[in-house]
Image (cartoon, rainbow, N blue to C red; front, side, top):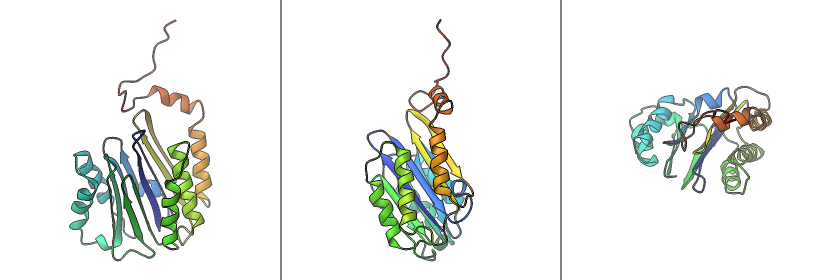
Length: 224
């Protein structure tokens, strides 16, 4: 039904995530992040928004990704139908794929990188995402868009795609949270939206709003 990626860049302190699915509103259902906590993706045939939000809260309080995932998934009797990824503020990752997930379903959890998918064309989808994510790109957005394209080219969601989302959290920039909730071709639509988000006047305005490195940033008065 869905494939997703979470990634951390140690050089820049930037977190990036992306997801796509053959259903509606993948951004609203799957991805959540916080620059002081990390990233979470919760998906599956019966995805739990409680898993997503509970893991993010635990990581904000200092829990590592693997501990947060174990705590949240262990007591849920419906966990067999769910899938979860987490990436903490140290770049640690963890994943869970329920035994009743619709195949092909699995996850990859490595330092600074986590990938998951269910109802995929096959293992090659996750492999393509991993290989692409480790490449060189000019921006985190470019990397995430390329990963989604690679997944789709490798077979992607067995049903085709209807929605896609991108989330980028940087210490020196405002969050970039873009979503295509319904489209016959969501990946090009997401790329086009991302391009528009990096153009003036919207992009220029982003230099005036608070960020982690400057929580009080605002429009400065004209000194003249």
